[in-house]
Each structure stands twice: as C-alpha cells, then as structure tokens.
Length: 138
Image (cartoon, rainbow, N blue to C red; front, side, top):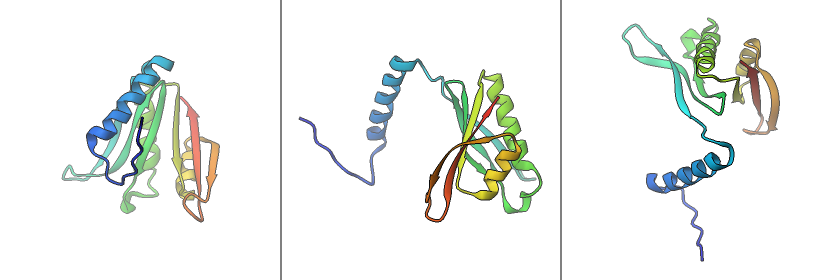
C-alpha cells in the first residue's frame, strides 16, 4: 500500500527520487534527453554577475528558464544579445528549436522582436496577467 504526504519542505533526496524516476521513464519512452545547462552571463566591470540568461538544452530544444537584465541595461538590446548567444550555442549542440515563457508584456514584445512566436497562453497567471509561451525555430 502507498501513502501520500503533502509537504512544503521536501528533502533533496526525496526530490531526487522523483526526478530520477521520471528521467528513467522518459529515457525508456522517448530516449535520453541529453540535458545540459546553458547560461549567458552579464558581468560588471569587476567581474560580478549582474544578470543574464539561464536555461538548458534537451531533446533538441533550448529552454530559457530565466532571463534578467538589470535596470541600467534595459533598452540597450542586451536581452536580444543574450538570446542570440544562447541560440548559437543551442544550434552548436544540435538543437532545432527554442522556447521561453513570460508574464511580462515588455519581455513578450522583446522575444517577438527576436523571432519568437506565441504558441500558448495561460490567462490570470499571475492574476491580472497572462503567461505567454513562445517558440522559435533555430
């Protein structure tokens, strides 16, 4: 018999059991993901990371999980440069597509300027906004 437990503080080994099980299932079902981290960092003059892009490549796709540009650099085109660099690395890894999601209307416009197109929306996430999912062929 199995028991269910709801927790707001799972331990690392508990989460690893879920992740390892899902990875093994997916490997058997669709093949290995070949998941690899990918980051493009923005450093200040002292070498400190002040922003950038964090994501990964898997199953031939680049997923941008986080993209942050500090206020002082917004409007300079650096978000586009971050995406361009990440996409170039993804292509070098054999990826054929990229995807990203956002609930920021400003970010959505920036991604669309980079050639991303909307493929899905989730209204009221968060309340008053729409989470938009975008993709781009590489």
